[in-house]
Length: 109
Image 1 (cartoon, rainbow, N blue to C red):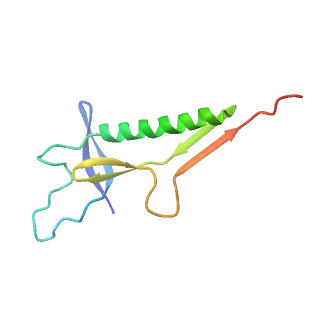
Image 2: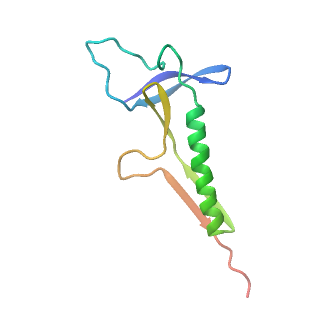
Image 3: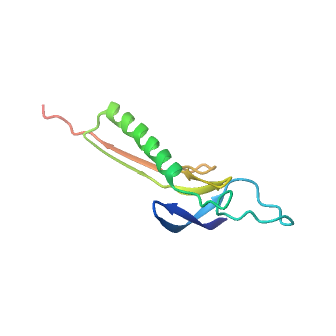
């Protein structure tokens, strides 16, 4: 079940839904909360770096396929593991949240 956590975005703070990826906290122990470790708020830098690398690899593959037109859509959910935000592009299941459309124009001839 997603939890709502504060996240640093540059000089601003916003609230996002994130799934807890690690073990559930001990109900009898202190709740570490979702605000990161040591009182720090998690930031989006790890998420944006991961998504940038992912998009770059997709772009390289599309360049090799050389379509005349390409569209890529992917969904991203956020997970929180040990106080760090993580991008979840595909969840553990049979469904992937990635859609790629490639078009080639037939050359006149």
